[in-house]
Length: 117
Length: 112
Image (cartoon, rainbow over the protein chains, first blue to last red):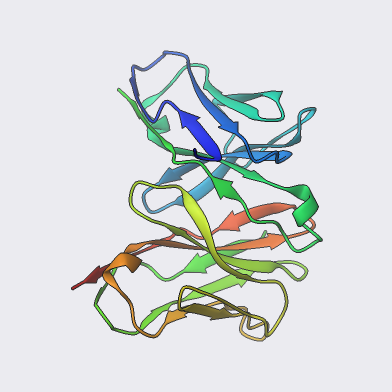
């Protein structure tokens, strides 16, 4: 079984709808991240959480919100979806104890492809 | 702010050709540098990393050397295979921000 899972894998929605993307991990990592990937723009960080009580905005948080329900679960919500939120969304995790000041490996889920009409 | 610049893609090579994907960075302090790879339909996975100047990261025949003097971390492979077709991302990490900063990615296609 995959260590980092995302649901749904594909989603089509309409402008103005509220949707939630979910991420679960079995790696026991404390840190979790949400990124979006757009062609020609690479990965951009939306939100990140270093533990259950610590949630931080990334570079493109406007229009998004998150919830860290447990160490293993980190959800991303689009309160009112718009077409320019059409993208591939990735969840990732990392282990603080592996950091040692040099940055720890991030482990990515398979992605959720979102289309907003 | 911290940033990573990768060569524009896409890159198309024949099997057994030599690969170089250029990556340069701008950072305060002394970052760690990473290459991640994204195979079709999958999430990213770490390919290799280097944590200080002159370190060489290597994995699966790929190599990259951390060059502080040229602020570069170019990815190389001597003989690519069709299975290397993927998108490659250069990234940096600096302890002050505790986040990865990714380049825009370079798509590689290897033809038989």
